[in-house]
Length: 402
Image 1 (cartoon, rainbow, N blue to C red):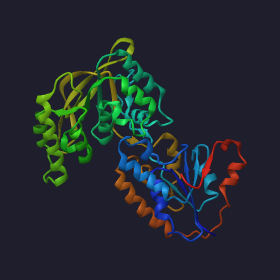
Image 2 (image 1 turned 90 degrees about the horizontal axis):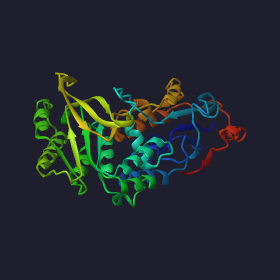
Image 3 (image 1 turned 60 degrees about the vertical axis):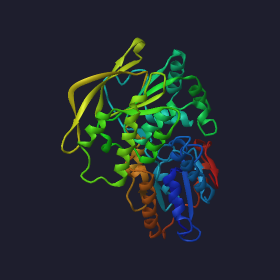
Image 4 (image 1 turned 180 degrees about the vertical axis):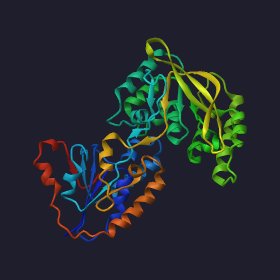
């Protein structure tokens, strides 16, 4: 019997799995790709910044070469159980990503104006799951008709994206795929400062040098940090500084030199290190007023520990950007992984850890395993027959390309 392979998730991991399997499994093999959304690309469309053109273009290139069949608007594990799916396929590859924010419980977390970075990213990318509360709150900030201060906790590229987009004038995004509704808000809101807060130092951050370089080269705002953070970070530097780490330090030294040019009328991105969010301060009508920060020191294992020192910063909006994990709906899929017929890959396998290059390497490894499997057992002919006979799947969209 010809191999039947199902891939769950039409994001970068799923599309690269399909590419690596294409033409390398037995002739006549059928590979079907399922996604809960109405369109493909996942992270490449709804996760990266709208002006990250090269990454977005890579997704379009992947789709241009796709010969697989796509099934959209299908929630595998919810609408379609994994047992129902496996009646029609020899193998299932779960590459449905990590679509939930990591928990960051803190006193005052229910305050109006506190959001997960995932909500903001979905908002400016026009994701169908964008919470209405984000858009409503941004409109409220517009109506304040004054400079807005934002705090972001997290030292990764997503935190940089959120900060950069909020500080950049709307006209810079007019020719991108940014949400038109978000663009209208960006035209009217005056985000004057964004403070990016990290609990450890420069060497422990997860910023990549290309993204930091974009920050240093922008003409739309001034990034800065305090020289004392450079000095404190150097106390915890690695024994060996490779070129990547040396370059990161040089970028932040350049950023620290901007401190002398700051004034209240200039849009600014402030990097705070060795700080943690102790609590959230509420103002009138339970809306966000500010943050209480705790000052940290690191132990010999580079773990952060709060000291008794505290400081306060004003904040009109607070964004938590500390990573992603599997969604609650996908946990039942994880239980089905047996590495015999059902496999996991990408962020779904790592629970949101690793970058895109690690994901692509994992697809190569898994594809090699799949090509060596035995497909010599019967499965039912075509899952399309199952969908046609069930009104629950009336909104399923089927196509031969993305």
